[in-house]
Picture 1: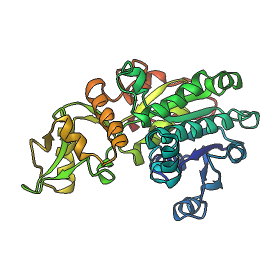
Picture 2 (picture 1 turned 90 degrees about the vertical axis):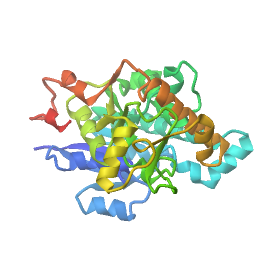
Picture 3 (picture 1 turned 135 degrees about the horizontal axis):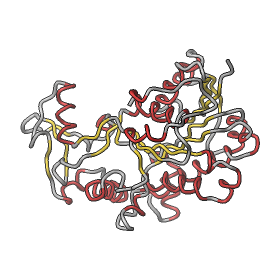
Amino acid sequence: MTQKLIVITGITGFQGFSVANAFLSSPYWKIRGLTRSPTSARAQSWISRGVEIVQADIDDPATLIPAFTGAHAIFAMTDYWYPIRTPSVQNQAQERGISKDEICAEIEVKRGKNMAIAASSPEVMKTLERFVWSSLPDVTKLSGGKYTKVWHFDSKAQVERFIREDRGMMESGLAARASFVHVGLYVDNWRRSGAEIQKDERTGGYVHVSMEGGKKKLPFVWAGRDTGVVVKKLVEDVEPGVRVLAVSQEASYREYMATWAKVLGKVLGGDEGIKRVSEKEFREMLPPDEDIRDHLMETWKYFEEFGYDGGDEKMLYPKDVSALVLNKFPLFERRISLTAF
């Protein structure tokens, strides 16, 4: 049996880890992971599991074409937040008189385009059948221009638009082979953001701070587990061109906090784990950087007013995927079970 090759960017991160795990157990696939640091502990752990690890830099398109060559599928993603911590971004923002958030958006768009352009090269297109970009909703468009500073959504959406609509992408054939996974709210964001869940020092209970009362339904995802299931479905069974929201469960923050407390054995404070605050109070709880505060304030206000997907009629959910499964697909002798969702 001839195996197909999937190339995974970000294999040492949450999404890449999930995608690699989803394909690793399949006899139909072999995996090549891209990383800047092939000697890192995470990269070496993949090698021990039979994954080919290749050094490549998404800032250097010249390294991407050989890394992508021979691929039948590519999973491409970027990390918006990582560069914001670097001195170079802070220096650029100061020199140009714009926010660090905007610089990070520019970096993400450039990196996403680098990967798309490399994937569209003749060398890669000889074998490529699916290109999956990890995207997010276009907040500026979906909010009718009301919210324009949700940089970490709009930058990924800009790359998606480039892949779909750019003349070079269409002429190369990449646009016709591309699909898009939109990843929901990470269930473990509370581990990385102090603003997500806080301890009420007066009562000892834990609360999620909310401007709307924690009743809005949002799509939560166990990114390290379930992203890969959706990506594998897009690669193996679904016609290209769609966007699917990777969601493990839709829940309000009241429901989320109940589950969080039960799993971790914690006591909730506030109103069923929710502390409702004004916009002013919410803003003051965010990191003491006015640009980041603008960014995060608009993010949460967008969620509350428009929902995570912004009412995008073209957004599919895992439950919708069954209608898109191909009856015939030349790569495989069998199909993934829809019960995986």
